[in-house]
Length: 79
Image (cartoon, rainbow, N blue to C red; front, side, top):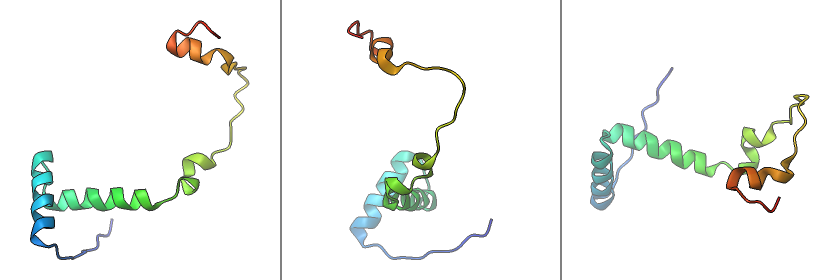
C-alpha cells in the first residue's frame, strides 16, 4: 500500500494536548494523528452516503414478527 507524507504545524497548546492524549492511550504521535485523521474523515461523510444504509433487504424465507420484540428484549409483558 502506497503511503503519503502529510506535514503540518501545531501551536504549543495543540501539540501538548495531542502529546498528552496519545501518551495516555499508549500511542505514538504518528499513530494518534492517523487515528484522528481517520475519525475526522469518517465524521465528514453524511449518513446518507454510508454503504450500510444502501443495502437492499435480503429475502431469507424466514417469517418474522417484530410485534413482540420489546417483550423479548426487555421482558415487557405488554406485547
